[in-house]
Length: 362
Ligand code: SF4
Image (cartoon, rainbow, N blue to C red):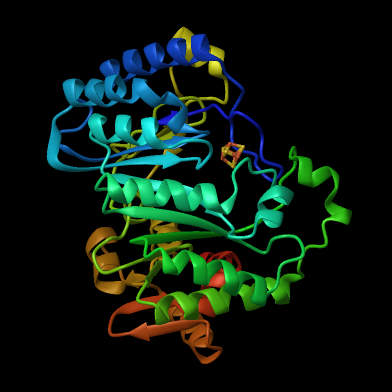
């Protein structure tokens, strides 16, 4: 579920979100619950993950219980359902985390981004690193034992050294999961307008940061299971992995995307239309060969050629395999048994590799 509200726009962010007050939050919660009720019965099997993302879903605060209860009332929900809440670590987290716990949230994703307050300020984030640590520690006290922390790399004025300092402090906290994103300057952001003044590291320097991070986190016991995600033992994000495995998912809220029963659809980036009860727009079919290749290459296990044959009734074409062998010779892919996977260096330029592989006739 997308909660499209933020108290202040971060300078790099192009997600769909707007400012809100308590009245708008009430209206939105009502519309969300109505929509959840309408979608009830979509799936023939129990739901085993629920994700509240944003925007800033923690702004829902005491409304979390009614939203999660609406899902439980409208769908069959597995008793071990993973319920994730994204948190913006600002202000006093006590009341929010207590409400989240009561509502049944059992996984938190905290937007830390950096351990350096100057970097956080440049990004336009409202929190300090201390606020993020306080939020993390209080969540632990309340018994949250599945916490993910977000980190950004490629920040203005950053280097491998500055990233090392952030990662050391993040790893010291011992979160179960770490997500890491390379800063991209998108149109319609404050950063886009001042791009030339940002002093961003060049592509090679960002590559050094990414490769350093992969090695450092692996050394510290985090499994690099997806291009941007690292997890301890069995703590991979059960929700996010569904996107890459091609499992059906339903997204509710303006700008939320879905793939259900072979069809893709999305709600437009229009809060008022959603509150009015407008229906989502069609967005083509899901589940084709290209999609399979694109999504599976994001994962450490990559593409399994036997699974490909079972799904699509044909082998990976010889030209495709030849290209993979070439990428392997260049250190960008590994071919292990029947799995074709990207190395860390390959993950860094995954878009280019995928584009080249999709030029094959499949
Ligand atoms: S990064 Fe998160 S908190 Fe910042 S504006 Fe975007 S959605 Fe809101």
